[in-house]
Length: 464
Image 1 (cartoon, rainbow, N blue to C red):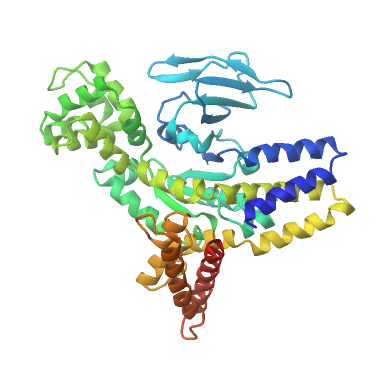
Image 2: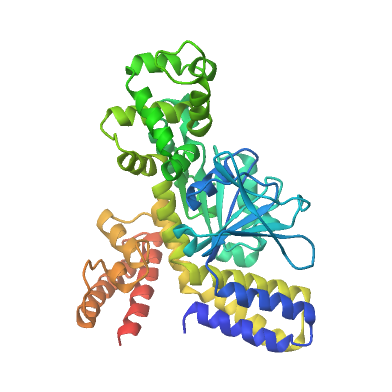
């Protein structure tokens, strides 16, 4: 039986054991409902790091920041509800403030949370939770299955937050729910034109950092303003940027030395200062510099330009990381959240007739192969565990780094039949059994091979 089904059965059994406790029953039912939802991803980080900007880029629309927890989830209509206290949620309107959507919270300015239903393709598979800067790790992770943690550089305060996110016996065993994001990547190196390349190199270095590796599955870099521009660029903005690109590079660069100079009266092309100021607020000096350079290079249509911005801003890599580590592992992350909830319940309301469930929980956490796969993906991608290049590529694919479907794990690019899948699996199993038994290999090498062997055995059972 798969991990998610085992944990689902444990939730149902716990409901029966605690049926006479209203508080425990409400707690368990909330997690039963949560089990069938899309994966919940909290976006957290220190003040002014750009959490709302990254959320806007992922949603594909701009919203004004709120001093509250704001949940963005998929919906057929644009609606918003404010949760304030124990009563029913209050529906509120969504208006516009300039170019941004704004939730009109009115008298509920200090709400527990705001839930926005929004028809966005991204929100079909995830619920994004924008968190206030003063929120504690417990508050951030209480309702989330996964975490995007934003930072500029890894500092002690960031490490403490990430350590707190794993400060639980089950969380330490299944530390598989965090992607770190180097936000505001365009500010690396004082906003030089090669800032985004430098930020990606720094992110790769952090993936191998012994202080960071155990705390997250991946580290990516994102230029938030560029990412939002890629999804929300308007025709009038594009037209203004094309006008700016008609200037010579050195001439435009001379006016980009400061915001005041760029928005000042002495400007070599006819363009209202208010328009230039608006471009700076939307894209920043770096964004204006990069976008005009891209237009000169031939990305001179809105479609071509936005495609480049998705790639260069890091938004594409962030989306891919969310897909691989969170969306495709939804069942595992939901099971992890439920196991944490059951552990909290057993500690808060210990009962003699719950002892079997407590033993089941310990056994599941200790033996869950799904958690081992995720830990191996992170170890191989970060360089913490090293295999020869050809073996590393195959190991990552087999344990699900490129997708968890059998075809993806086995590297088939067409719909192979069961016979072909079995033959490929048997070949892989024999090859990795030999690696696991190789006395000349390092301990980490053999341990990684054992995880791959177990994966192959589990896949073979599906086709037996």
